[in-house]
Length: 383
Length: 162
Image 1 (cartoon, chains in turn red, cyan):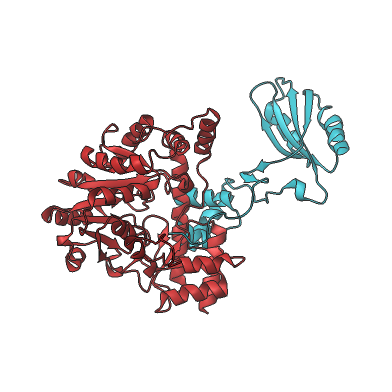
Image 2 (spheres, one colour; image 1 turned 180 degrees about the vertical axis):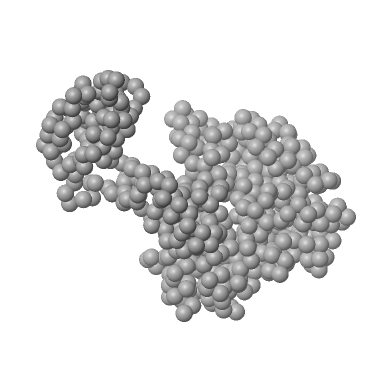
């Protein structure tokens, strides 16, 4: 292979493979795996949204859309996000992308100069650090802690040296911990960002899956809208992961910059998915409510079972994850042995960066039957 | 959602949830769950529990028919009176008064088409208030009580994803 001129760039070579890949390969060889390792809903996309997608295909609506997405969709998104107190102009301040992941990647490339420091609240979704590296930036992990229930605090930002960062990215409700942040907690982060003139990328993909209180967006806090890009999408709330559709909300000049990259790399988000999304926003609110009710029950169930087993776990209030302490000091070894002996898939917390060590991510986006089986097996494994 | 509604919702989803699991899912004490179920039963809100069976999977597949009935009323006879007479037959699995072209809708279940036919012609049609019956035999059941019988099994998702 060294003979060929086809060699990965230094940038790509500097990014390690995902930490969960080795587990995936082991699990793929097994029958009867009950997986709590999945980062997507177990529900199918609401039926009406699927029908709308099919209908659009039958009508032959298969061409590109406007780069920033169909106007009808952007108008509905603008209307939809007012529930969080967010006001964005559908013409200039919204861009529809192939999943929130594309929007996040394009935003890194749109905002980060070589050598820029990008603070990442961790544990975090696995794409942030590679995204910063691909953009030529320097990731700066900001560790959140179990004793703070994994919320971001001024103290943690200062301890990590984030005052010198150009940009901060975080995700609340959080993957992998299930933590959410209250308005008061966000105010502290907002003040820090204003004081040190830091821009914010707020990944709010799980906003609709908030079980205690209401979701707050940092962009609604004083002086934050002009320094924040908000990300959301259809994957989690509307169970549309495979349709790949997300969006970014930001002031016009930022959307222009993101669009500069998006128009040359993606051109436009998948048209079929955009038609599904319009229907989702128009008519699938009750499906989302029903899914939320189900997740909340499962969350209660899993937290109760873990507690009964004597596994320490803070009360996760968002997304569809709990993040208990590993019963063994080495969470990776625990996850691997649990998979081998009981065929239950969980993800060791260190796969999500610093702060995740000694924890396990368990997704409760699984049927009650599967959750009960998984909990029974874990209980048996611990005995 | 209050506790009664929450417990009822879960029982309608799966009547075999244990009280311990119902307690875990709702965050209620197990004793409260038990009391709530007892109250739902005592009040007649929960009239019973039954399995959702795919008839096609049975060795002896029963025959089901949807029977439309028209009736004529007089001063002494109400819909309720007729309903009482019809509901008493064990062959009648469900009975509803309908708006529209006919009055009663019966789901009739028996071991054979002959048995269903005989039941309708010998027990239902001869009732003095019944003016007409139309019997539709069920050919295939795809969904019942929110359960799909044609659904494909299994979780297509990959077992680890970020």
